[in-house]
Amino acid sequence: MSANVSDDDLAAGRAALLSGWSSGSEPGLVITRASGSLVWDSEGREYIDCTSMAWSNNIGASRPEVVEAAFAQARELSHLRSNFDSVPLLRLAHAMTKAAPGDLKRIGFTLHGSLAVEMAMKLAMLNRPDHTGPFLALTDGYHGRSLASMGIGWPHPNHAFDRAFPAVLRIPQPYAYRSGRTPDEEVDYCVGELRDAISRRSNGLPPALVMEPVQGNGTQLDFPGRYYREVRDICTEHDLLLIFDEVQTGFGRTGRMWAAEYYGVTPDILVFGKGVGGGFPLAGVLCDTALRGFQPGDDALTFGEFPVSLAAGLAALEVLERDDLLRACADMGRYATDALRGLQARHPLIGDVRGPGLLIGIELVRDVKTREPAAAEALEVYRRALELGVIFGTTRYAGLGNVLKIKPPFTITRAQMDRVLDVLDQVLTAIENS
Image (cartoon, rainbow, N blue to C red; front, side, top):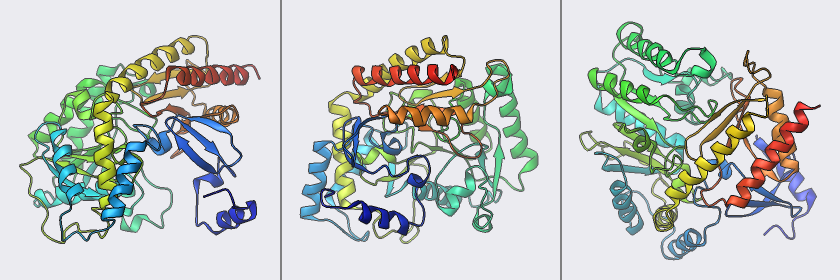
């Protein structure tokens, strides 16, 4: 498709865009092909992709089984309005609910994680009509870029949007590395803040607490195990719904199908997306069977049950299970994390290494004692690694720019991961010695 496209055509197209990430840290980088854990640009350069293209190619990019399933479905039935059922809709609904934790056996589909978050918010309001207070959300949570999902994420700097944001009360998440408290002290503090928010600071009972089990854009941060259990107990005590936003953590990223399973806590509503579609747009919610569902028109979207994406999602789930990719993710996550902790002993820029699975965060600091964030250095690592053929993820929002992410497809090979680690070692050494 790109063989006969001129540089002038590409430049004209870039100038026409309203916005684009490529105008920042990847100027002029045009990706033309992807396979497994590798991508190639328009100049033929090869890169190991540690971002899974926005954490979406969990089973590897351009999986033939997924592509063929999507093509076959498109030839047979490419679009269907939501008034009707389709075979891929019913098959994937059955397969996904079989793979769901606890009693999360009802499902709804859409195309994007942001809209799935809104679906979860609608369900919460529908099922807790007397809870007229604000939604609860964690301070550095990220939940998408629609108006409602932006509103429950961290405060957005563009105040042109906040007139349409929902009512939200933010509470701190456990971040012992930054607070200086022990993990237990940090959990006690954050649990106390949650109780105080419900009992004193919320104008009416909140309908739900929305949280990522592992904060993705918020410094790739996981929490002590006790925190999840305490949050679940508090939500049950006050009849609040607990919503896990697993758009990034779900579909195997922790080494388990869902982070809810990894941490042993089942929410009332689980939001999924990204990797579930095998590279095709697919998202939605799983909810407890005790919850009331939608009435016709409550959540109808023209392409919300897109047959092509549903067929791709079914194929992706089959590949995940057939190839034992959950185990592959867990094993490679342990290997990489152990190796990174070895690097940490030799590199003063590495302040903290976090998991689990292939949800790896590396927090860079200028001083291991003061833990001053090394945001400029993190961006420099990213840029230098890109020149050497490795694409790291970064945190770039709300001043949280000092964390590198390693979140490749689960199919990454040992040799590819060793190359990633070698490049990181090389780049850190160069920056520390400059």
